[in-house]
Image 1 (tube, rainbow, N blue to C red):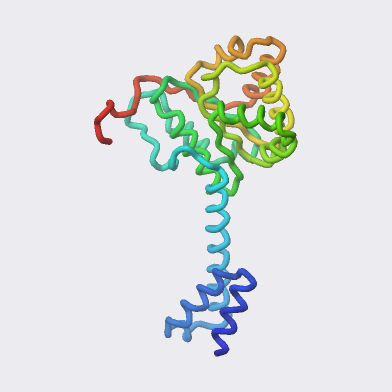
Image 2: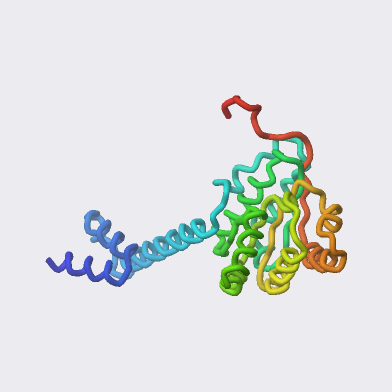
Amino acid sequence: MLNEQTMTKLYAMKLNGLAAGYEEQRQQPRMADLSFDERFGLLVDRQWRWREERSLKTRLHNAKFKLQACIEDVDYRTSRGLKRAQVDQLSSSEWVGYHQNVILTGATGTGKSFLACALGQKACRDGFRVRYYVAAKLFRELTQAHADGSFMTLSSKLLKADLLLIDDWGLETLKESQYRDFLELLDDRQGSGATLITSQFHSKLWHDTIGNPTVADAILDRLFHNAHRIELKGGTLRPPLGEVE
């Protein structure tokens, strides 16, 4: 009866890991050979792991990655200009903590989105809050937020992300007002967040794509001045249509 009351109280206090550890210890007779401090230490470790696993699950859910990718599965066998040393450096996620950027370019099918999601997933595992967007969807949300009066709410949400991951930059023609919104977002995040952008277009072409030279200069300056750049080369890694992977 006392054990049931203890378990009920632990769950009521949201100490689920502690409750699970307590139940595990009760079912292992050899635990009686350990001292109180040793058993208590094991319970604290169990609660800590439970909290960390729950936090990671929440970060991954909120990130909304397009692909389930992890850095350990990055393919270096295919010749596409991807250097293991550079990826290893980025996989530490220190660049996120230092509020640096990553610019990832390459033709369709060279693995940009996979690598981007893998770096984002690793950042989540390292405790950072990540938000993934396809560029077109991000700009649609910004435009809609202006229309319904929720722009400040959306901006605040984006500002809280330690890493903002924008996939497929440059595929749609945008209005100057949308680029100005993006510039404002970069200004707000400068010194407080990192940005990762993937694009089919080489970064040298981005200035002309933006159009307004003043806005283009400002956007590219904020993106490129502290950016790690990766250019993927070669043909598509995707299997031919109809071929099973």
